[in-house]
Image (cartoon, rainbow, N blue to C red; front, side, top):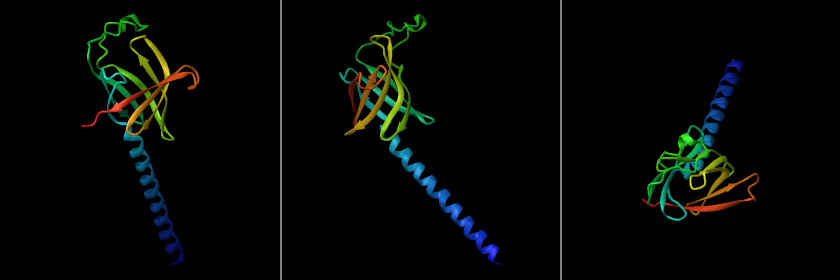
Length: 146
């Protein structure tokens, strides 16, 4: 009789812990997903959309004042592609209020940099750098209010 009570208590404890872990993971995911949305480029001459694939975040150019080709790309076969529709922010992972370990591609220079991002007052701060983030530049992308 006592074994049955212990087994039932153990089952309830395991169920409760599983539910708690699920709730915590869901809350973390919702916090991380606050970045998802549309933003003005720093010069307001383009729009960028941040989206999620699996557990990583990406950004693509969805609108621009001018139609540009990726003419500075180091890969000759990509120099005729349109900049609009291009994924230029890749493979960011959410960790401690920042999106890290990603890369940013600059179609104006054809260069790719290490990058991290974070939200501040609903604006997206994007820091591209070489090596360590102290050696870089931060740009602000303003969230587009619908």
